[in-house]
Image (cartoon, rainbow, N blue to C red; front, side):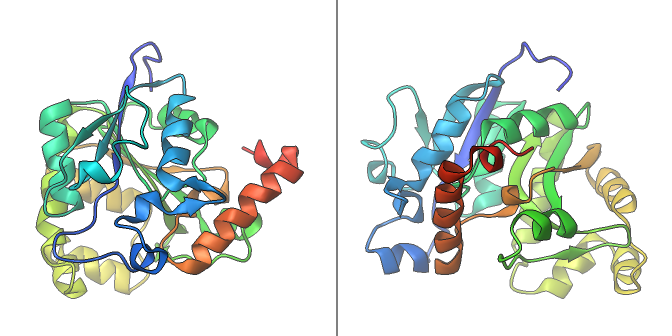
Amino acid sequence: MKNPERKVTALILAGTRQGSKDPMAVAAGVSHKAIIPVDGQPMILRVTDALCRSPAIGKIVVCIEAPEAIRTLLPPDISIIPAASGPSASVSAALTHLGTPLLITTADHALLQPAWIETFLREAGNADLAVAVATRETIMRDVPNTRRTWIHLADMSFSGCNMFLFRTPAATGVAELWRTIERERKRPWKMAWLLSPRLLLRWLCGRLDSTTLCRHIQSLTGAETCLVRMPDGRAAVDVDKPADLELTEFLLRKDVRDPAFSTMK
């Protein structure tokens, strides 16, 4: 960000989608995935610790539908707000309550590091909305034994890194678009159609690049949008399934054994 003196509020999404139970939490015998131990520590505390150690972050807020599940785990200066029916609705409500700039991440981003946060905020520049991504080449270089969901564009294939910066009020339009698309999450073609039939055709033909995608989001929402390429492939690793938990714990132990790897940027 251009004004490093202004602290950014951070929101951690830690809830479970309404009407469903997270299979990871069920398997671990806990109420929420956020409190599953990762190498002996509840994963949400790994996220709050990284945010606390980032100089750019001010207030930290956790969004969850059951505050009692985590209240005793969190430091007293971290606030809790109730989750809405889904992630996009929770983000929209948080933007109304907390304003901008607002950094959003997730409780299962257990490898999160302060250096990644600083890089992301710096590279976001003046965009209204910034989305952290890691290219396939970067991820395969740093975490060759991971399996990710890839988004293939003409100029890059990437995976998301669970960091979003809603830098200005204009970005709230993106949250509203997200809510509209999320309602069709079980119908991917409907989601794509809502974005634009022409955009869908370009993507199917392998002609949709990241610049065109960001410009189209701006045309729909009024928010200048950018994709920030993270230099460390580990930023794309979250704990969505048992294999991810095993990989995350392996990488944390590797950090301890190899300090050079833990500070890679």
